[in-house]
Picture 1 (cartoon, protein in one colour):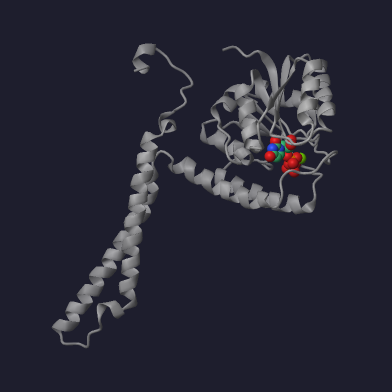
Picture 2 (cartoon, helix red, strand yellow):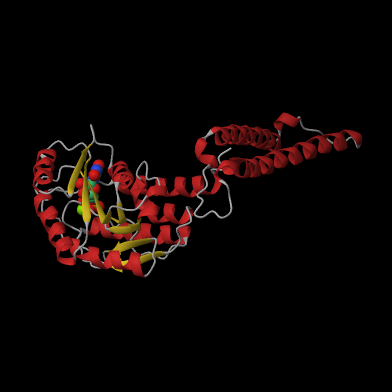
Length: 328
Ligand code: UDP
Ligand code: MG
């Protein structure tokens, strides 16, 4: 399907009534100045202020501005995901609604995707206007994420990013995974990921929507995304390896304990009851854990077999294949 617009701007928002009119005006100005065809998709993530009324007003005045409203607050990832699936632009730009990201960056991001062939370009808030309680942990997170993912970005969580349309259609952002979109994109095969230094401004209205728990959640998400992406299609490789190791450790200790006992009896050495030895308990625990891991592996494997997504592979091109053959 051909794309309807040059650019879709996707904006998740939660209680941002004051910023919206200014933000939309600014985006429209930039688009008109550069002659882009565009749409702006505002996703109201269950705001409790008058954000939705403001959005309705703006979209009546300007047909390029569209709004979607959630029935409750699902989180930034859900809002982004919905906006992505709704977008019709050739290049999709995501940005925060709080005016911390500047729409003036959009034309250059668009150019990088179109002309330099990037799949994804992430903003880098080199000079940040945020409190230090946010910037220092954030540096740490970026460092860890860089090491684990092997993607050379300075600022994974920047709200301002641009994507080739195909990327947002194939990347699913759930939970609070918006922090790791470049990582998910890379694991889906979109590995040409670039970075652009962007202007960052202090929050003009309202307050931040994420508290301290962002750091704990962020870390847990990184663990699960690493695990899931590696073992989703083959969970037994993970559980089976550790299960086997544990089981055999237990088995060897058991053999040793029994052997030791028989040896002692045979040569009339003083004998201890098997259950009085620490090694016996170690063997017991190792055997049980080994079996548990195996069973977990089997269950995970059955779930992987049943789940639809385990057989979804992205085909980018086909040649000489009759539709009937692949459509089973
Ligand atoms: N946001 C959202 N749903 C939420 C929390 C935040 O849609 O549950 C939006 C918020 O309105 C803003 C963007 O996500 O447009 C980034 O949030 P915020 O500026 O509070 O984050 P920070 O800049 O502090 O990282
Ligand atoms: Mg912000």
